[in-house]
Amino acid sequence: MLSEQYLCEHYSVNPPALLEQIQVAQSQSTIRFPQAYVDLLLISNGLSSDGCLALHGIDALPQRNADYEVAEYLPDYFMIGDDSGGQAIVINESGEIFEVGMGVMSQDALEKSADSIADLLINHQGLTLGER
Image 1 (cartoon, rainbow, N blue to C red):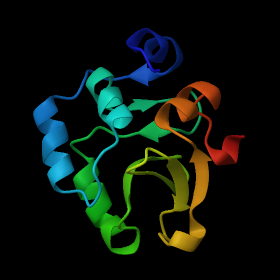
Image 2: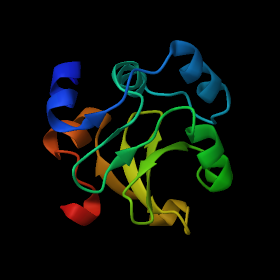
Image 3: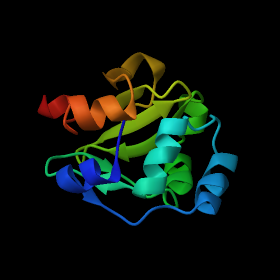
């Protein structure tokens, strides 16, 4: 389980998101946000690693998902960040994390990155697939 202390020790964190901000983004998404992702947002509204991982603040995500047409090409996913090099970080309702090229956005191009947000941030130490 992710804690504020763990996140602060290992990542550059932001102030928590407001529940209202999460609800607005949720209403514009094609998926129901996994509770673990909501819990992360309530600790840190986005974060970044010393490497390539950038999880974006919830306010920017609906527009980012619209710009990259995630709902059209990957309706079972929601973009939550990127690897600072052209790979989107997406999550599904089960909480699994995948990476996909921002110029591709197809089911066939999805690569599983982690079993959960905690798996990505703890077990994989925030390393994207390109860094592992």
